[in-house]
Length: 87
Image (cartoon, rainbow, N blue to C red; front, side, top):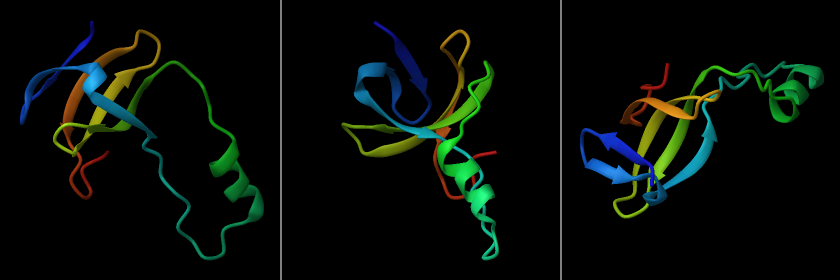
């Protein structure tokens, strides 16, 4: 069983968390082109790297950012998902 160390809630089983997807910068311009919007929505680069992901702890409903190495599946860092916290 895999465990996650979370400062606010302690050590928890990964099975208590729900994956909500990677954190990516959205195109925010009203004049964004169709090509740029398509790139954002449909094309994802699958390169091994540390990526920031959004996860929810089901029992408490608390949202967290996980920094996870996609090559090794190792969770490098966990912190609460407060507004503007993802980098």
